[in-house]
Length: 294
Image 1 (cartoon, rainbow, N blue to C red):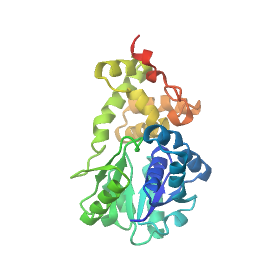
Image 2: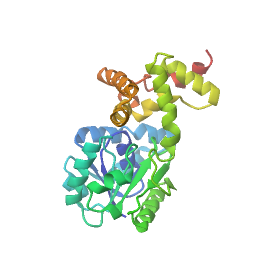
Image 3: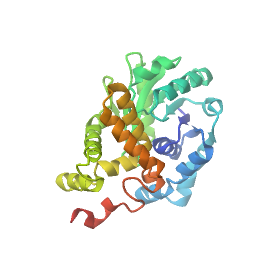
Image 4: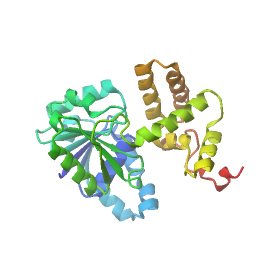
């Protein structure tokens, strides 16, 4: 593989794009808003300097490998060996995208989804290449938490799994291969119950987010609680997941939680990226050494 297309430059899409470019691949980025994609990718500079000690020159070398950022799918995918989709968690949106990109992508292009919500057998039917379709699920802050969960369907070619595994290692990820499809993969199967329980306690008025996080962090030694994690994920993504859960279950608690988060979003509290979520950034209260003392 040499040319990689990233579809969607949200929180994770922008990280995947830059990590791939930093590893020496030619990267094209498709995003509806070009300026937003550019801003998100460049904003990673401070994280890479802090955590990986990249110099200005080294960070710029990664940027130089991002050959194009465009709002045109055809331009982004025209030479792609691999396309990684990181669009919002809307099945309708993904269906429209895969139908479009299938008509435009070269025959060689492998399709991968970073979806946290949908398993590959839900998405592959929208493409013209189910044997070249799989999910590659990255953890947030991939330069630090460098795992990628790889999950195919019964139709996915073993050679495609091998190619995805090789690519993951080349961008300095640790590949975790799932033997069968599983909603939530491994990471989210373990993590989502924690986040859901925290959101439920908040929605019911049992305790505020800081108090819930404080209890979890003191009791387990974790570096952050569910609401700190939600800020990293982004409230737009979390709210959409709750909307999807409501559509599937008709459980009103999911709608109530989504409504509360969407009210925060309307007020500009979108998570770490916007500077405000459940906490204020760049110095959230849970990072203060005194947070766990009182």
